[in-house]
Each structure stands twice: as C-alpha cells, then as structure tokens.
Length: 247
Image 1 (tube, one colour):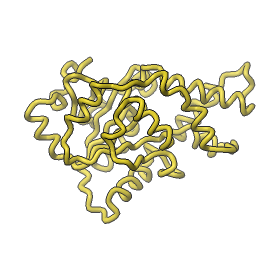
Image 2 (image 1 turned 180 degrees about the vertical axis):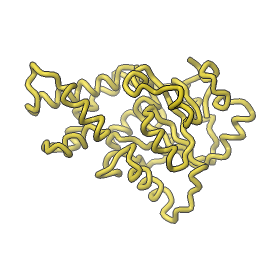
Image 3 (image 1 turned 90 degrees about the vertical axis):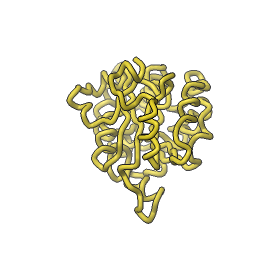
Image 4 (image 1 turned 180 degrees about the horizontal axis):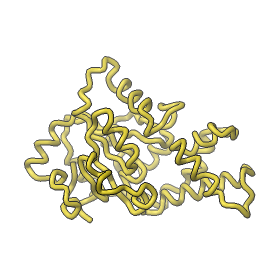
C-alpha cells in the first residue's frame, strides 16, 4: 500500500504538502518498525533472542513458553529491559543484554536508497532526531546498516537517556523536549513524530505533536488499531521507503 492508496491525501508529496512540511521545526523518528518494516524479520529475530535470554537465565523452563512469560510484562512496561527490572529479575550487565538481544542486525537491514531519498526530501531546516526505546549503541548499528546515520542528529534519544522511563510514558517525551530545548521555547504544534506503535502516537498526540503512523502487519495484529482510533493520527502509511514519500 503506497501513501496514495492509504487514502490520506495530506501525506502525498504535493506542493501543498511540501508547504505543510515547512511548518515542522522538529521531526522525531522511532527506529524499529518505522525506519524499516517491522515485517522484515528483524523484530521477530530480536524477540527470539529475548526468549533465548529468558531460557538461559532460567526464568522459564525450556518446555514452557518464554513468549507467554514475556508478553504481559511487555504490555505493561513497554520495554523488555524494564520488564525484568520491574519484576525483580537481575540483569548482570545491561550492555551485554542489549548486545545479545539485538545481535544479527546486519542479516536483516541493508542500505535503503528509498528511505535515504525520503529523508533527503525533508525540509533542511527541520531538526531530525531518533527517539527509540532501544539502547543507543544498538540503534546506531541499525542506522548504519540502513545507511541513514548522517541524516539524524548525533544525539540519540534511547534507553540510557530515558533511564527509568520509556515511550509511551509522557515523562520520556518531556525529557526529550527538555534536552532539545532547555528553555522550553518549543512550539509542540511544530513537531511531527513518526511511529509504528499506536500507543506511542496517542502519547505524542496528547502533548500536541502531529503523528505519522507506520502500520505493519505485526503492529496491526498486536495493537488492533480501528478506523475510529486513526482519527487522532495526522497520517497512516505502511513505509517511509515509499516512492511517493510522506510527511
């Protein structure tokens, strides 16, 4: 489904939309499922790594489902590392945890020329940041595989930056805004967020952002976003690597 097929006219790169794009001072991009498709296999691969970590730590016997152990905790805490901390599990080395669960990125993500073209088409004056629940080092590895690291600000807003919070918690969003502009002069109506998680779009919408929802089969199946739900969204597309481009 292209941007045109989505039925949302304001995301096709027409002259009118390009004018609208000029109104955004800040563009915030999620990573997983946003800059690359959640259906490419890497998201499922990282989850398999998480399940293997669970088994290796002995939290669940191998004849039981690690996914069933993980999923309700993830739905409550929104990020796997926070699941374990919140439920009393010891993580001896967090960097090793991230390295183990995110390993194999180069097998799934490659240089994406259409994504690069899309990013290059965005207004030059707009600041572009990565805002992800992933660890910063692993986020950079993914950006490098996609060939888009240079298109974003050097500072990555990730797991270590957010500390005890993560998306969709409002505290995580506020921490990012306060870091970008400590004087709090940001006009939130001039910020657009690109996300594959509907609950994160809801949080962004509540604090005044425009939102572009990147919908995959995986996210649609897990979050069950209805047509009524979509009314808060500025736009819905299935990829940012679309020839039409979106904004």
